[in-house]
Image (cartoon, rainbow, N blue to C red):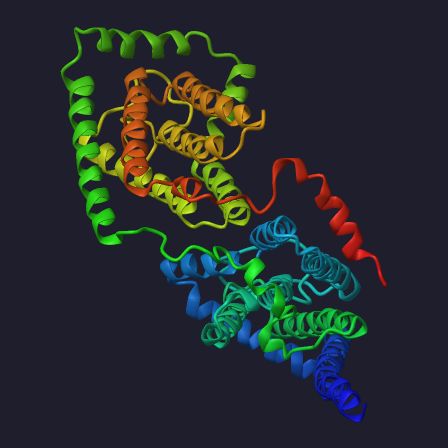
Length: 496
C-alpha cells in the first residue's frame, strides 16, 4: 500500500515543483507587464526618451534601403492577424478532424484571449504611434502593446505546445528555438518599420508570455484533476496525442523513387514549355488569316463594345478570383485539410507542384512569346507580363482541377460533384472576365487550357496523388461524421 501511495505521490510532487516554477515565471511576466504599462501610461520620461531615440535610430538605418523594407514587411506579416488566424483556424479544424477536441478548445480559448487583450489594452493606454522623419509603414489604432508581438507569442507558442508531441524528440528543442527566433524577429520588425516603440514590443511579449502561461497552466491542472501525468512543457500539452496529430504517421516515403520522379518532372516541364512556346508563337505571330486570328480580333472587340458599369464591376470581382492571393488562400485552406483527413503528404505535394509548375511555366512562356495585349481598352492598365498565356486562367484551372483529382476518387458523397462544377465554373468565369476587361485574347485562354491539361497530366503520371487509396488508406473522419465535431467540441469545453 505504501508503494502505491509513493507511485501516486511522485508525479504529484513533480507537478507541484513544476507548477511553482511555472507560476513564478507567469507571475513575473504579469508583474513586469503591469509595471511597464504604468510607466507608459504615466509617460515616464526616461522610458519615453529611450523609445524615441531607438525609433529615430532605426528609421535612419532602414528608410534608405527599399529592399530591406520589403524583407521587414514580409517578416512582420507573419505576425499579422490574417496569418495567425489562418494558422490557428486550420489547426483547430485539423485537431477536430483528428478527434482531439480538448486541444482544439485550448487553441480557441488561447487565441480568442489574445485577440481580446490587444485592442482592449490599446484603448486603455491610448498611446499614439511613433512619428519618424521618413515614414516607411503605417498601422491603425494605438501603439501599446504591440499586437504583432502579443499575437505571435501567443499563437506560435500555443501551436508549439499542441504539436510538439507530433515531433521526434530530437526536433523539439530546435522547433522551440525557431519559434522563439521568429517571435523575436516579428517584434523587431515592428520597431524597425517605425510603427511601435521598444516598450510596445516588450509589453506585447510580456503579456503574451503571461497569457500563454495561464492557459497552459490551466490545461495542466485539468490533466492533474483527471489523474493524468503532467509532463514538462518541452514535451507538449498532451504527449499521448502525438501519433494522432502527426501529419502523416503511417507514410514512410512521400515518393517511392524521388530521384526518378524529379527527373520525370523536369523532362515533363520542358516538354510542356515546348508545346506552349510553339502554340504561343503560332497564334501570336503566324495566325492572322486563320480561324484563330479571327477569334482574337473579333471577340475582344465584341466585349469592348458592350462595357457597362455593372458588368465592369462584376468582371473585376471575377478576375480577382483568379489572382495570386485568391489562389493562394484556397490552396492554404485545402492542403492542410487534405493532410488532416487522409494523413498523406503526397496529395499535398501534388497540389503544391501543380501551382509551382503553373507559375514557372506561365512566367517562362509569357517571357519568350512576349505577346501584346489585345488592341482594345485594357481595364487593368499596364501589366508586367505579356498576354500569352493567361496566368489568371491557368492558375484557376490548375488549382480546381487538382482539387477534383484529389477529392473525387476519395469519397462517394454527392458533394464531390460541387468540386467538379467549380472546376468548370471558376475557369470559365475568370476567362470571361479577363477577355471582357481586354486583358487577353481567346487563344490566351486556349494556351492556359493547354498548360493546365499537360502539366496536371505530367504530375498525375509522376506523383500518383491517389496511390494511398489503392493501399487501403481511410480518412480520419468520414463525411457522415462531420456533424459529430460540434458535439465533441462542446463536450471538451465543458468543465468536469
